[in-house]
Image (tube, rainbow, N blue to C red):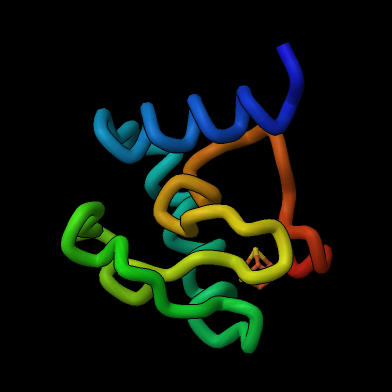
Length: 84
Ligand code: SF4
């Protein structure tokens, strides 16, 4: 299966069913995304709350278009700007 699709499926799976080791990685990535100018607000905050990583709740990456709560929780794609 294409990496992009796997990244989306895996990211949302890990968002719904958190894994301790993935959450640790996700927190480190999220700290970088939270101060990145390419992270932009979406209307997803209500639909996709992120209680464990509040700093990226409702944000997406304007470079790749990914919802950050899923993006930081997958292992198939890296940051499109090589920040993580
Ligand atoms: S994935 Fe990379 S480019 Fe996108 S918001 Fe996060 S740090 Fe910025």
